[in-house]
Image 1 (cartoon, rainbow, N blue to C red):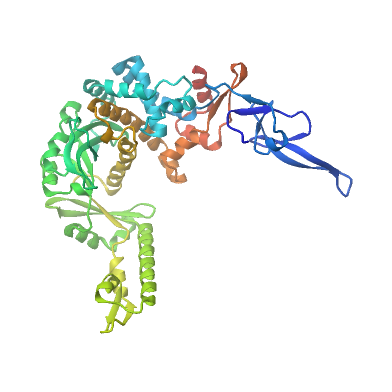
Image 2 (cartoon, one colour; image 1 turned 90 degrees about the vertical axis):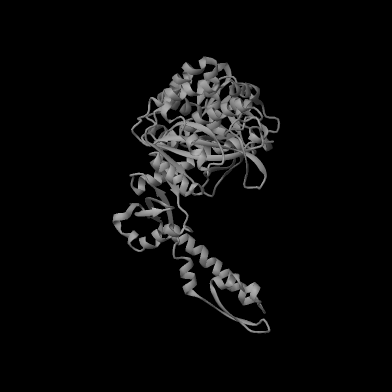
Length: 532
């Protein structure tokens, strides 16, 4: 029998010893008492668990049951017995100080605003799948489950276009219009025929599915999402660009910058954005001749300290006509990336060499792939000799560590890269819309529910972006992801014991560090818990 997080037993009154450390008080079962050679009493003991937070009960481990198979067990109350409160506290704090709670209240009313808040908490912690939402709120909220799956569906379907627009206008008013708003455009597929912006197109699996494109606009001042809009696809068609800018006048978006994947790199698209005063940051293809030429012209001068933008990363601007439009290719070189790619190449060459050493014969057909890195001499009876061609290997590794971004914005390489990499935040949050069985657009036939869920995902995205912005340096230093931060905060638990007594486990150094970056401490958490 094993113990669970809600299980406690009476502390044995005899035959046990207790040893305290900084974190726990461990309880041992004394199994034998004796004296050593000097006559000093000693004993053999086995850990059987630890004292609970009150110091009066035992939280047993598996050893306990071998000594006390019929131990007295106290089951805590089913609801509100142990709740993870760290994430709920941080999400509530972020929504409060960004002013989002008030905006949601004024736009949707108290009941729906609370439900949106609950949906955002779930999305921040667990993503966009809502099949087990009731279980989630039983463990991760101070209140009775405020949202179950049917209520969530009703909530999403109730969120109207006009309400979303009213909210966006309130939220946008808090951001400086004279900064760039970077628009990241994403596409995903659905077989639903009831979604207005879905347009038939071939997706990557070569299945005929409708495609929806989502553009999310991020303020370069705050680093936070400002608003989003959906468009019919495919986005590589320049005829869709006017749709992507249709809300600009309404939202006073003066300095719009599109952050786009390299597949968007068509001359007509770039000309349209130039002619209409829009900026762009576009992934560059090294296979494109003029971009490849920009890379070759940057070597070896790019390794000058004048082009170093951070540790092990260099950026050099190259101006000229690219894809038929005058702009700038920002050439980046990462020595660490080059070393990793070179190691992978040399490993591949080594594997090929091992294969060749074991072959007894080789035909022209089977020799084809080996000729990339080896000189091969074949005679008529399929016998052969081989040797490494280091010139070919060096040529293959020539552009390792390089990548490019194409832009017409008057920004330096560091700013351009920061804008482009923020696309990952969008990807990691909005892509979940299609990654859970209960919310796959292929199974969702109601446009309103899809749009409502996208809206709640957008609020969750703001929370995630704020976590990323506030903890940027700490997360980089410690190699944390957003999920690592969430996981650490989930360990903060509130325990409701008998007679409605409530206790919280001590915060760890890491948890305190996270809260410190948000100007919070344990006192703020206790105040939040007291309101619950």
